[in-house]
Length: 124
Image (cartoon, rainbow, N blue to C red; front, side, top):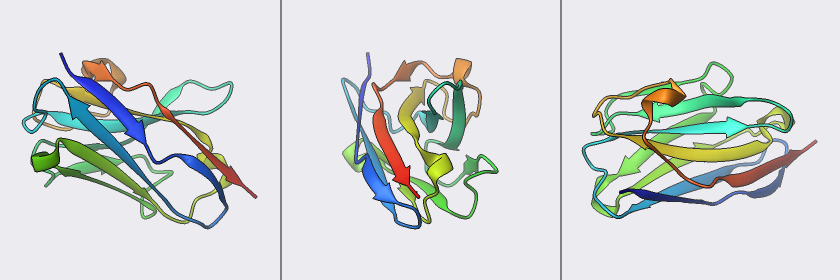
């Protein structure tokens, strides 16, 4: 079983940055694809970014391309999401997820484990 815990959320102003972390425990996730999703108030949970096991391949939602960067440190069983130039539309609960496959995926149903989420609020 894999337990995922997100941290790094908070309240920032538009244009500022945040760095989210997702620490995995229970087993190594170094061979697993991982990803970030978010759910804004009153909306469905959406894909944000995903990364393959090695960190050499990644995919982003169009809304965050050029502003967000996903990365991972397999030695620390940790994944990151660097979020720059934040906008009010980025306000959401951010979830990390891991999947047994090694590649990256953008579909939520392809992920096997989920964190509890961390709130990101961007004020205008």
